[in-house]
Image (cartoon, rainbow, N blue to C red; front, top):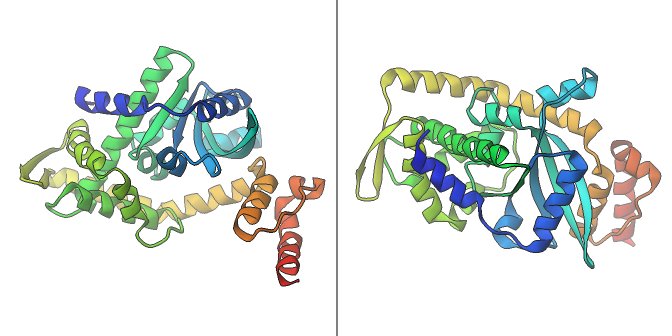
Length: 304
């Protein structure tokens, strides 16, 4: 891992956030017993507190041997929805949580998962860490996420081209492997928000991954040995084959463990349809079973 990449990532993770966002982050971290919290996603870009904030809470090692502990170890992350009162405002957040040790393995590409290193090759802010050692581990992990993403981009992208061409190729391929439903052009929107950032990151991340490159003007050509090329393509083939099944398993898990799913679903319905339905005990405890009745009520309300 290169010091230049670590410095780049550390500076970016120090991105300041507004006081309400910082307060919400600390609250959800406390609720989940976290030791660090990362902030990412659309609200990081826009600052719009009317949207849903995205947090990643990193936790200590999982203890116990029950079904829930097993699922946390193998089908991470755990997902929950939170509403946090900050002054006169209610802030809503979708929170993913996983052990820091697992996060550190995932960003290095040591599992078939692609979601973690793809996500954290994009901008994020480290809002809080319990101590300097944890902060250092998180910074290093996010740097590894960028290096892992760049390593795959070097073989999935063109033989040579501008940095954007490599990132676009990577995001298209990972969206396809992850069973994600994204609007056409989503990968271009990610780059368009901070294009200079991705341009600067790519050569630093290649360096962090031990990949050399040649540059002519704005054109870059990664220098990947044939043996490394074959190994990386084989690793990608495996992720393509298993990625969708992994995410199907995660969706099944989330259907039964997504805390706050009822509140989140009703809020999304109200936001997108204008229909405001009450959160009953049944809808809160059994969101999947309640879903047909909720949709029927929405249809009736909009038809009347």
